[in-house]
Length: 520
Ligand code: XMP
Image 1: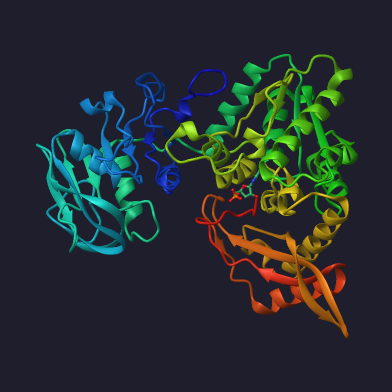
Image 2: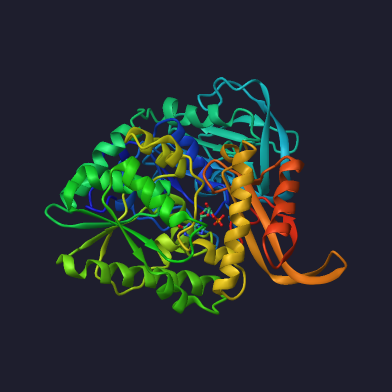
């Protein structure tokens, strides 16, 4: 539902995904949207009214870690059992369908990894998939008896019912994961479901989205002033462009220097915004105020909460002389929404992202979050639609709490300065080597440990800096970037030589999951 309480047309007629807690549920949503069909993830507790408000043409039940017989296992929303929409169950979702529609599921040996799918007969779901193809399995339970009305449409060597179909009721199940890249024809299978089985239309485009988003903001904030806190990143710039289109001169742009920015960032961003976007943006120097609330704080969640609260208090002070400013627009994205809300499904909260969770309960602003339903690459496409410059759209993401969550342990100005200097070297070398545009995000982390080294003839006992560089499509999953060794060598030797108090540099070789991109 939009923040005006109405579901816009561009979001109707898509696919609802019920999330049973799989780590890759978001990938299902992405694959559907890449086919220009809107998809929204809802928890198993979703009500019939919530689902109907989206007028979906089909429902996908995701995978999940539970067993259908387990205590407290999530169950299908009751109204779906009468099959009011075409449905596709994936892994746990297929087991739920089998279990709830009269089949039988048993605990089998755990199967994880690649398997070869062999088709049995023809089906709409597997149309265009070769008779044998590679799929990705990850399950404990298996369907051993199909519910009445279903037939088997594929098997693997260890899974008799690897896919099932009831074409009459348009209900399908697959034991493997079509949403992951390791399943060779996964995209074909999902598109078959979306287009052949659900008859969705390709109406989810950023052009259509922009039109509706502008109209929704105009309706909600008619005659009101809207504060847009601009960080110089993609998200807030796209928000500013949307709000600007909607309400023009009633947009109040603020750029807050919270002392947690990268080297020279404040000046660069302001110059850039004024020159390239022609935006009226006021710079607020709040460095001392933020540091006062953060000095000595180590706990990552406490850092985020203090930063969120301080931002709001600064905004309130800044707009006091402007009369009533009712709205604050910010660039919350869909992944922030999913990752910050445990009520969205059984997957637990991982981090409170500043955009959503770090804000105080008591504040004078109502939020306008026009990007709440979008993934990062959709925001970039939207930015292009709004004619934002390319170098802005392809800037690496930078978290709202800034360097605070990259400085592990207690925050202090001298340690922030160390981190800032090391970070600047990494970005400079990345750009110089041409690798900047190949990675999703790169930065340094200052660790709260010291290690022994030797410089000249002297023993040193000094700080350790970690370099983190990842490739990703949307920040939801990521892999460590395979940077050329000579680039890493230059970064390392420059940091150790040029940044005081650092005698060791390490490279982070973890992927997400199980790690996250940021260290806190
Ligand atoms: P993680 O560390 O969760 O990060 O894998 C995923 C993406 O989100 C960014 N990030 C944040 N952005 N406020 C933000 O606005 C936050 O508190 C925050 N924490 C992480 C991170 O930089 C990456 O792009």
